[in-house]
Amino acid sequence: MSMAMDQRAPAHETAKAPQGERAPARIRARGLGKRYGALQVFRDIDFEVGEREIVAIVGPSGCGKTTLLRCINGLIPLDAGEIVANGERVTQPIAGMAMVFQHFGLFPWKTVTANVAYGLRMAGATRAEIAEKVPYFINLVGLAGFEHAYPYQMSGGMQQRCGLARALAIEPNVLLMDEPFAAVDAQTREILQFELLRIWSERPTAMVFVTHSIEEAVLMGHRVMVLKGRPSSIFEMVDIDLPFPRNRSTLLHPRFAKLREHVWRCVMDEAQAAERELHV
Amino acid sequence: MAQPRFWSGQAIGIAALVAGALVWEIGAQFANPAFVAPFSTTAARMWEYAASGTLTDALASSLAIYVSGMAYAIVVGVGLGLLLARARLLRIGLESYIMILYSTPMVALIPFILSMMGFGFAPKVLVVFLFAVFSVLYNTLEGARSLKPELLEVARSFRSSEYAVWRDILVPYTLPFAMTGIRQGIGRGLVGLVSAEFFLSGSGIGLLIIRSGQDFDVPGLYGAIMVITILGVALMAIGRTLENRFAAWRGLS
View 1: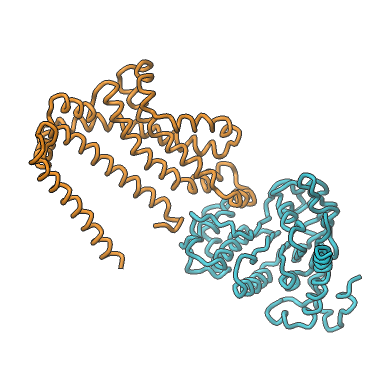
View 2 (view 1 turned 135 degrees about the horizontal axis):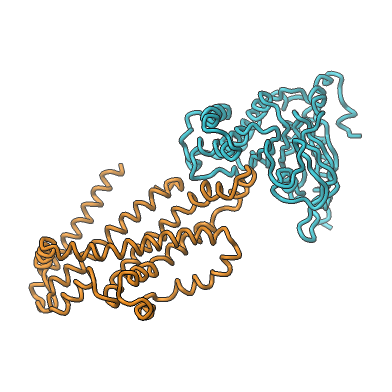
């Protein structure tokens, strides 16, 4: 179907392992559609996410990636179709799911410790569980020593580490990432990408990762969902047959360049067409 | 670095006050004693009042009214402000009334309160309350409404109950704004206190001011006014300290 798959080299057969882990599905989405008034944002979206699978969503800006993610979280209602996660139909936020926000979403009046404890407290964790887990997850994301810092005292990268720890602390089996590294500088972004991959390989979960960076999508995802069109729908689901664990050397993989190019073409066709239209 | 500048700032402030007292003292020597009393005489009269218990009795009587009125103003102002921030329809319904009352000079309501409630303790408390409550309410409401919707979405994403939203988000976020309102209310409430003691039944410091004026006791008049002023300055300082303390997370202090 896709150019990327046609060119698969035998050397990369080992990379297929993660796809074997796709079943059983943690998230099943059928016929999703969303409208804002007269504007149809997306429609006819079907996909599944495995228990230990990362699905990255890319698409031109305004294609409804973030809207789709918020629907998966149950924050906004769908107009068509249904999402089943953890065997439960999603109509509002459900247990076992946690979101990391582009704007970090930290509570400025809470310290790192209190921010990380927030999700646990809302999930009804006991005092003892909170006392045990919060330091563990603060340490896991590399924020040891900043337990009593307030968000305004930390850089954007550190704030997002805190946001990540807050989501991880409830030990979700679905992690939703809404352009989590879009608001941090380029170097920090790279560091955080590899940290997230390291943390994920320690505790693999289902993950939906929305990004506007094609490179990031290819680096993070077992599969990349390309959303486009108006209203948008799934243009292509690209298998990313790169080996895990992924790290800096993944970026140097010749296969990485090929897949990135393929996804780039999927996304950009329309952007270029739109640009041509403007010049007519 | 900050310490020497802080102390030199304090020194200049104190020097300015001493200079003011000196100008007052010397200037009063050339003025008509029927209208102007020098600083030394005023201070001496205050001391006399304090020693005889006149001042403490007046202060206790005034403070009882003031503290009661302010307590109601804070509880109602903060509580209603938070509630209106969360309950959209209620807010739309009451918004115009709040604006109307916020812009009404409360002194104008005193004769009405007098005819309704008479001369007792309660109507004076009501006057203090009315003078102070709208600053508290308005600042709390506007503060709570400036809470970013993103943070409420984070709360929803983590399945927070309405109670948890209030305890963990709405109240801690709004406290610094409420404190700004309370600090403004402290000043307005003091105006309310003196007005109530003037225009309802005379009592406390207000009565002391009126009586000194009627007796042409100029040092007593000045002294009583100074007591109110010192009270206001002290209460404002307390209000500002509390405000800064609750705003620590904003990185301002």
